[in-house]
Image 1: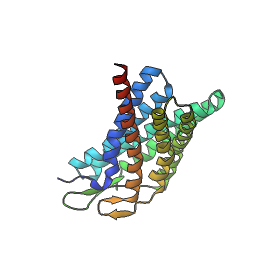
Image 2 (image 1 turned 120 degrees about the horizontal axis):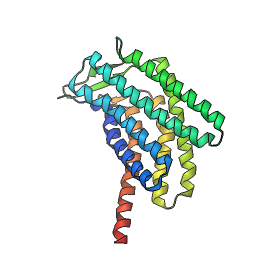
Image 3 (image 1 turned 45 degrees about the vertical axis):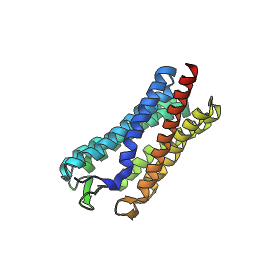
Image 4 (image 1 turned 135 degrees about the vertical axis):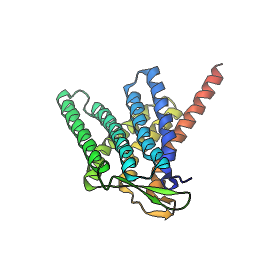
Length: 242
């Protein structure tokens, strides 16, 4: 059985994003903080994108079939970034209602453009994703990146930097060191994630991994570690209270 071992960040990112989504949604239910809701919804969209990138390739390597799932994955990624843009507009423009409306219109137009580009790239030959066999047990998922795709992706990912700066500023008012750690971990992920995902080249280190995979994997591991530390701290607090 072959697996996409070359794309290790997909395997790390999926469970981490599910954990982040559930964690922030539980926090939203307790505090009604809309920031948590945006992150929860966005995390689930991005987790869906990773799932539809990985799972279908385990069962088929046909470019046309994979193209359909790649289209779903791209829609999920665009919805993730659309959610983050809505969050960024809310925290940066605040009371400027006119500019908020303009921001929503521009962001929605960007979403439509991204989905249209994804349809053209993934649903027509030569299709947006191809599989490169590396060995009897491994293959690489190769995503076609057109200039238009990279331009739209860059515009969409800029929202993450704005949200990352917002979280870093908020970390100074955290109630305790654990909360500060979690907020700063998210901040680092949101600020550096776009640079690593878009800016790092696909330079292979060995047949199974490249520089971009390592960089993005580190971001996911930082988030995962912060979630684990937060979970341990919450259990200790619960134990101490009882």
